[in-house]
Amino acid sequence: MHLTEQQRKWLDGDAGPSFQWAMAFNEALGHFFDAPHMVPITSAHFAPDTRMMGEAGDTLLQTLVDDNARVCVPSYLDPCTVDFGRAAEMIADYGLTEEFVGQDRTVFKLCHDLGFLPTYSCINYQTVSAPEFGEHLAWGDTGTAISANSIFGARTNFEGGPSALASAIIGCTPAYGMHLDENRRANLVVRLDCRPAEIADWGAIARWSGRLAAGYDTVPAFYGDFAPPQTDMLKQLGVALASYGSHAMFHVIGHTPEAPTLAAACGGNIPQAEHIMTQNDLEGVFNGANLDQPDVDLVVFAAPQLSMDEVAHIYARLNDRRVHDNTKLILAIDPQVKKLADEAGISGGLNRLGAELSTGTCFYQEAPLMREKTGWRTVVTNSAKLVNTLASAGYVTAFRRLDTCLNAAVNGRLDP
Image (cartoon, rainbow, N blue to C red; front, side):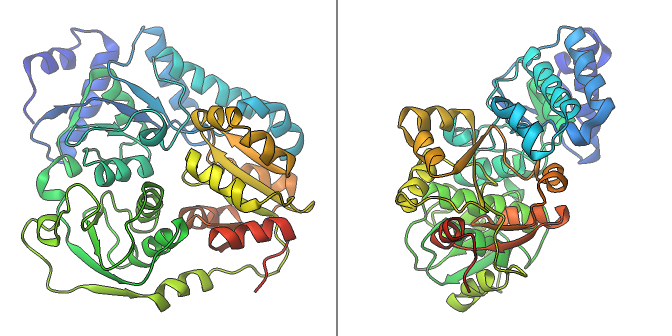
């Protein structure tokens, strides 16, 4: 892999141990993926996970802070596990330990010391700063990465924690995967012979199609006669494709920037075979995920965090109905949306109706930690990704459209 003179000096340690570590990590990553060179990035997105990174991750962050390392590009933080504004409640009512809350707080303080912005967001492209077409990024959350690639035409891979951290420090990342033109071309074609009308429908499309040809090198293209999808719909399509298919990019013909036509999305080489998703297929996705009992412990809107538009829509659709005493209604949002919801009076309105706003989290990180204390087991959600991620945490889930989810929250039961 070709390195510039400056990059070679960083690798040799001329700029100190932090730059040397970051450069060595990304050079090794580039060699593994046969990257020809590095590309400069305009921003980074780092997803530290207190449960997964353990002592080794803590030590790395502390070592970088002690060396006075700093990020050199705008750098954003993914959601954390703890809503720090409700830490006492999380400990008393939801089973998180004081030790874990302290560990999570320490991890994110170290990130702040390195210059990461306290965004706590997996939708930073909506609430903080949208990427520009063609610019290179080092974004770590799979949902942010696929959205950047697909909705905005920016370029990033699914960056693991260390590679996003290293890239933020040196301002460059190896040129492989979704940074290269040839890997962004559609090679799986899906005709939507159905009528997706809301956010959950696009998650259902992802759940159905993500299993057709799972793999990072699969780039699906969707086309058909349907209403133009809104950004929140494309967001749900992306996060669910990343979850079910491990896809890092998709095209919606006529609606995403690199897909004015099917031929353009495929780079002129349209696959001969195509898959067709019917309305029956779409409805079957919802019918195929059911609870084993009617009582509902949780209704959760998360994975990804909600935009302000989504929060306002949920509040309006509740229509002043109170949440059932035996059910929790949780909305996962980032601090940016929380501020807007507070100013609009929506936060107070939702709390008055019995809903909870979980700020700076995305629920599925803390969900496994909460089960023992709360006894929660059944979840209804309009997020296809959340259904997938909660499967390993012992929850029984039902995937439904928005109004059905809200009815379950109000009634405490999921009607057939």
